[in-house]
Image (cartoon, rainbow, N blue to C red; front, side, top):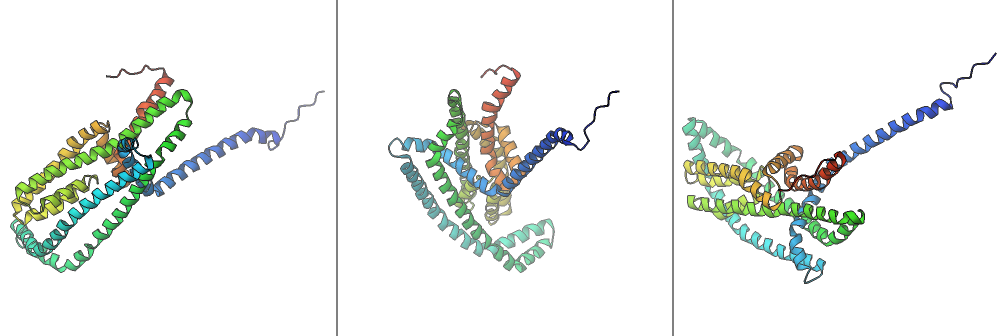
Amino acid sequence: MALPERQPPADGPHARRQDAPVWRSAAIAALALALALGSLAIIWFLATPLAIFFVAIVIAEALTPVVRRVERWMPRPVGVVAIFLLLGLILAGLFLLIIPPLVVQTQQAIKDLPQLLTKVGDLVNRLAPGEGTRLVHSLEANAPTYLHAAAAPPLSALAALAVFVQIMFLAAYWLIATPGLYRFALSLFPPRQQQYAREVFREMGEAMGGYVRGTVLDAAIVAAITYVFLLLMGVRYPLVLALLAFLGEFVPLIGPTVAEIPAAGLALLLSPIHAIIVVVFYTVLQQVDGNVILPLILRSQAKISPLLVTAAVFTGAWVAGIVGALVAIPLAATLKVIAVRVVAPAIRHWSGAAEPERG
């Protein structure tokens, strides 16, 4: 009589060997999830420093064509330092040009403040009798609070200046280190793919640099249009207001609106009709610039479609506010190059699809 085979206990070594792959897979999945969540948390926590570093790279790529020309005559580090010193002198000259009119405008605005409040009160009284007088009295009663809040902009300006200087230094360091980083990145690819990788890197740099050049050109156009319009309208300080419009173009969404407020206030000193015309002008200019001028310029400079520009700005602003809006367009330009030159060919190779015809 044959004895039945002895079954290993459920908790014996055989069961442990069978269960081990399950536990190992679960542990690997849990570790991968933890690393992914940890990476997202680190990126979220370091969003501002990463954005600053990315902006520095974008500015560096915008200056790359100039650096390439200069390094034909001198070593690259010396050329980079010379370029940034020249930029510093130009910015210092513009700063000295802007500060005196701003000081004069601030002093004059303080003197004209009672007149401006009176005009605001009269305008509101026309729409709602009595409400304008109460509004003026309320503003006068809370004047100390508003004056205390007015001390914040200079501090914010100093903080922004410190960040700007930091970005310039990072951009200079990036330009100096680019050849070494470039060679290291190419060494990660096999020899037969290095030429293709070189082209992809070049297109990514051109896309980011083109965004900066396009934004500067767009801001110059907006500032010129604003200056001519305000000059014809007889609004005070058209040059200063045009410079504010120029700077506002570098802050998506809220920059142009902030530049509109002092222009409308100074126009109100002329008449309510002037103020309404100025507000309508700024509103129309913002719409035309955001939907026509800027997308077309960026399409030629950074090869970005108007749809991608609009979607990138709104997505970046929704995800990370002003910082997200600042880096959204150059980041979208970079991702577009990766998608078109890397991801799409890989998918076609995997699926066996034919390459599209280039028109």
